[in-house]
Image 1 (cartoon, rainbow, N blue to C red):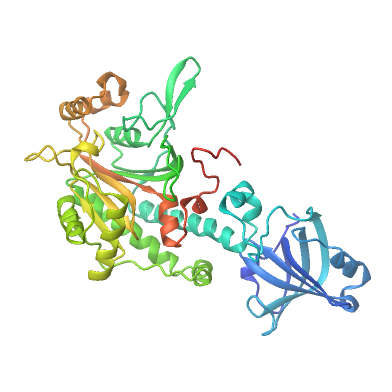
Image 2: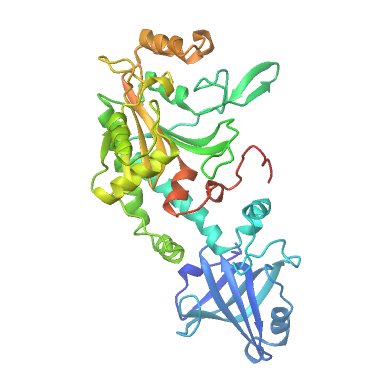
Length: 436
């Protein structure tokens, strides 16, 4: 079988014959010498074309290249401390143009000419030719992979649930109704009711990764109408069990990312450090609001405000050297019906939000597994019980359970210090954007 390449750029070692494939990033013609900067998903490397060594035919092909042509090159990798991109280069012996690129590109991908975020998103897959932009999504893939790796090691089973539902998961109005043949249906706000219901089967630890939908007409740097939700649910004794899994999963992912050579180079280039505290500090919602009042921040009696999230994180970063803080025991008033309420105070829920660098990245809690109490919660929210098909499964031995949902784009944004969550979404959807 003929291989497109036998090495990726990051794998190249001196004194070996290599076959590389990638896009032409830059070209420099110096007469009898020409330099091509080749880019693949792992990085950049200089390819040196010497007319005398590679021959007239190969050399002319090099001189006629255009930026972003997709090429396959063959040659010998050699060490050269003066060569850019790692002190290695490839001495060219053969080149084949597999696909030509039109010129000019619709946007600059070198980083020398700045484009607006809207224009970059219009040309998202061209924008990803910029290694810094491509790096965001390689980083994101590794982040999700390491979190999944932790869960598999801890006996979690991945499930795949439908994103078409017969009822709005969270209630409220922020859902997208659709016509499913001749029936009314909704795009799922989360896989919550499915990942809970499956626990009655005997599987006791599950996770689900997929798109979810919120019809929120926001135009902020932190909101998307479609985002990747990383959801975990497990049979527990108390909410503490799932908090340990959440912290363990994130700690594992952070540690693995900090040992990943490709990621480390990207983080260094981005000027970003990601550290995980020895222990995530925890405060109740009431305690959090007392701290915020002491800082002169206006509070909400039912939920944390965006400013409250930012100031609370700053407070714990300064006082406990943690960029994370976990807030628990939120009022029932603004939390979903499926959360368990405190026995001694039904206005308070067994719930939590995990904040990181000023933003909520996870939300979760212990679920109400008792059928009668769950029905009561639904009614107390003013919702129609008959709309929730999942309820029937709770009659047949549903074990106590807890879980959380994590927004992948938000976590990526905060880890990389990006300015807008859309930068961390491959194809972001907001009230105006439906393409690409």
